[in-house]
Length: 212
Image (cartoon, rainbow, N blue to C red; front, side):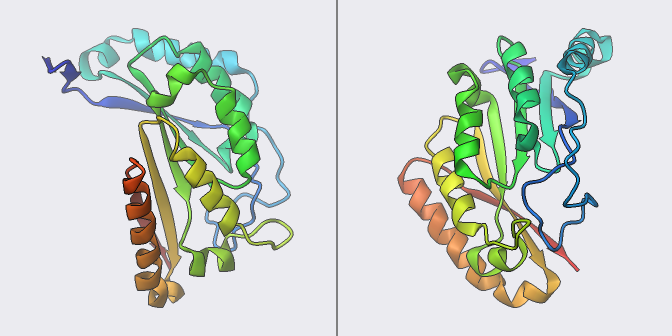
């Protein structure tokens, strides 16, 4: 059924692990991937195309769901951004296929190159979650492979993404239990960022994860 042109059926979540490689080396990473791991999971995009097409044709899908949310994981999924681009370009004509990317947001230039590879009409179907812990925590734990800090680069990427007509943009904060004392200070920073971007016409949301 439709109300104001919007279906009351949920989207089916199809998750794709683009790569086990990552361009960062967070000290609290729980994914279990090794820093030296440079393996690309699968570059044969036809297999992904076939999977999505098959889901679209299934009776259970057509009866229970209004569309597909393709979620890209890693490692850092944009390390293998070609797979993401290929899938979005292939299915861009479908208004009921949307995309969610979990990213560390590191290296703004690389992210700009990725966004530039997408058709402009695909941006409103894109949701992006950027991992950032708040400056006082982020640069203790979220480091590069050669132990350099990443916070400044991540915020630069977030600011760039906030200028785009994407569907949703939010932060993911991971807070080690020993950093709970910093929670109030990090949330003051997120509040400042929130109002800064609200004034510019963007909405900023924060998802939080505590790890012990």
